[in-house]
Amino acid sequence: MKLASLKTGGRDGSLIVVSRNLKHYVTAKDISPTLQTALDDWQQTAPRLNARYEELNSGICADIRQVDVKALAAPLPRAYEFVDGSAYLPHVDRVRKARGAEVPESFYVDPLMYQATSAGFLGPRDPVPVVSEDYGIDFESEIIVITDDVPMAVTAENAEAHIQLIGLINDVSLRNLIPGELAKGFGFLQSKPRSALSPVLVTPDELGEQWQGSKLSLPLHSTLNGGFFGEPEAGVDMQFNFAHLVAHAAKTRPLTAGTIVGSGTIANEDTAKGASCLAEIRMLEIIADGKPSTSFMKLGDTIRIEMFDPQGNSIFGAIEQKIVPYET
Image (cartoon, helix red, strand yellow):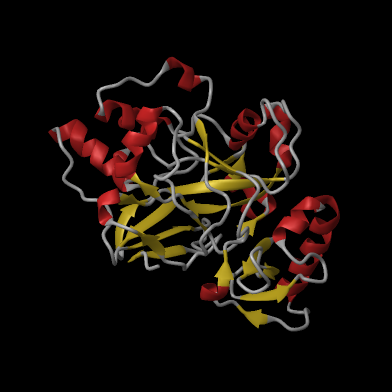
């Protein structure tokens, strides 16, 4: 099934069920007012939501409405927890090479992950407000999974059963603020503003054979200012699958229902498929030429992130955002 949230209804939005073709929706407020409350009681709410989804796709629901993407909040407008990994070895390798460092041996057996911002997410058409272009504005095209309640110390073998929903994220980064923060040793804070989620989240069964081994094996398309930027394969060069990432996050603490776990920037060894962030292009330029020639995003720039099934249908809908000046 496919689930989304309207901007009405308060900070957590109003849960709706969206048709497979992303054109229509029906309310789910009689089942659960918000996606978070649905996830809190997923074993009870999921079958009812799925039945509503089947009725919607069959056209037998009452009060079917047209989807207006601009009226959508993030499917989870805020979450208890968002942890973001860096599961793609080519991306990590290029980051290190660009500054003359090697990939640490531990990365090959232990995921890299940080505690990200979860107090609020931007909707799929919401602009990205920034104080200054000097911050080094970048997008990062990634995949996310949402879990139910995950017990502490869960194994990777058992973690996949706790993945209930899958979607996309634009993990916005302010690159010029990152070096100073990392040098202090406590990780990202100011360099990671609010991210944006795809219009809908989907259950794994919607992905068919493209979801195997806790990986989504389809290209992720990024379009910058209307032009091709990248379409790396999400199922290729992923050092750690989502089950490994969930297990890593839960090693010493349980994860609450509604926890978001990110893949990190999608990247392939084959650079012909483009990239999923500007920083990676700049890294390749540094490796080749000693300095970057591609600039970060400017005010007025637009990024679009989308994934299609083998038949060319949009799975999650598109994140499409414009960079705008922050106004008090």
